[in-house]
Amino acid sequence: MKQLIYVMQFKGKVAPANESGTVLNADTTAPGCAITSVVGPHGISGTLQPVGDAEAKFQSEVTFTREASFRESGTISFGENRHRLHFSTVGQGYIGASADPQLKHGSVIWRIDRGEGQFDGATGLITSNFFVSDTGEVTDNHFGVIFLKDE
Image (cartoon, rainbow, N blue to C red; front, side, top):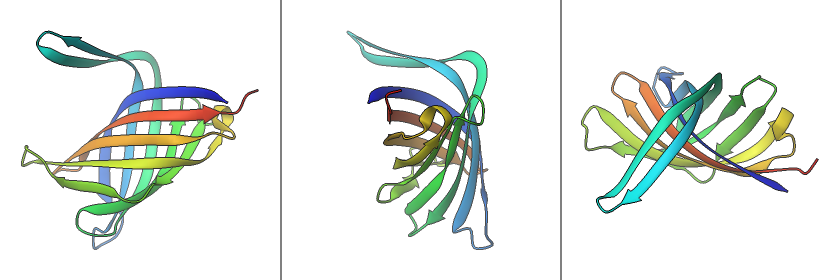
C-alpha cells in the first residue's frame, strides 16, 4: 500500500438542513497549499500558502447527537470530480465555545468509507480542526493519512 498525506484549509458555509437546526449542510472549498512549520528559539510559527489553480470540494451532512457532539458524513472531491473520498465520523465530533465569543471551535475524526478515481480502494483517517462563526462561515483544517492500493 502507498501512503499519501494531505493538509488543506477549507473555507465556506454551514446552513441548517432542518427547521430545528439539528442537521446542518456544510459546503466548503480549498486550494492546493504548501504548509510550513518552523521551530526556532521563540517557539513555533506556521503558514499555509495557496499553490496551483485547482480546488478541492467538501460537502457533508452534520447531525447533532447532543449540544456539543455530532456525527458527520460526506465527500471530498480533489481536482476533477472523479477523484473522491466518502467519509463518516469515527465516534463523535465535538464543538464548543472558543476564546473568541463569535466562533465555535470543534474537532472530528473521519474514516474513509470508500473512494473513487485515484482513491479507489483507499482507506485511512482524516482529522478536522475547525471554526464556525455566528454567521455560518467555516474554516476547516484537514490532516489526512490515506492508504492507496498499489497499482
